[in-house]
Length: 499
Image (cartoon, rainbow, N blue to C red; front, top):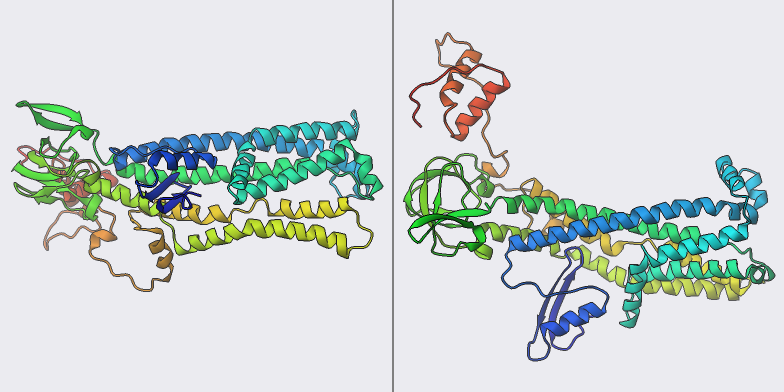
């Protein structure tokens, strides 16, 4: 729809991330006009704030995904409960329409018992009750299917919402006729069966799938959330001759930032004075701190381990290294793999094919089957639509790509794009740049090797060394102390420690 608008050079829409990237000629169209076009399709659009960083976008996306998940879950629960009720209330109708088959054990005994409990009202009454129940579900939890299907129809297109709307709508219309004028069906040799429970069940199943999809997206964002959390919320900068704590968003290029031992570095910059050891494992995977002094570059999100220093901020906001990593991850989740483009093409022709098959079924029944009524042919055509309804080819591939990139980030693997992920299946040889790429990121004690002639046991030797290293913040010292703690060794007191 957007691509067909005058002035649009290129348009890429990713429903999983709720993003649209549009390149357009400002002399022909405008941002407001394109937003209006998208809103007319049934989706709500608004321009992205120009000054928002990757961190702001990630927080906004998480809020949106949380809201989407809660709404989807509520709809799934309500429609699922309605589906159970519809199944129970439909049993008297099944028994009434096929008493011989039920009597021979076609249905389980508890179903027959349930039907007997509901015998205080006639099957016709339960049919009207089911009609009202199905109408309520279609107009409440399933309303968006019909709104979006109508919007697609107005734009001369079709999607999965079209299948759901047409399939459930046809089943409801057929069932409503069977409820209101059952004699019309009987005169044409067709039982007045109703499919209200199928209508409600289809909506419930699809909404359950949407809930699982929303849950997967929310869990995928957890990896990006951990990346965003690496940047501290505040920074200590020099303002008007004094130290002031300001939000990290307020730090500007050229500001003088102070960092103390144990603090995370707020933004990227160059050290002016002081020296320290900085843990850069979040970038390199290397466990050992890197010594830094005046003139060296530091990266936001890394940890200052020992000394204090001052540095000048150089790249802040969206230009920082950490912001670029977050943007890389978000772009990877929104990128489209070749297999996804194939799925989109298949999905694009799937709906018309199903509609055509349904129409062909109706025609074949009318022409090729002897003594068949219009009602019977219509019932067969509706069955084709209902069977095709839950198809989700258009959602399966993008959801899989999104979850895969998120899981990769959780394991420390940053995937540049969906195409790279797809091509990874054909990898036969892997070349690694350094040990930090595949190691845990922190040292650990594996063996205790004493000098020849030492009379102390391994446990005593480890206890003494751990006692000496307990006051040090060095990663190797932390590994030794951790190993002593795992063996529950009591540490000795140390005096006059110097790092």
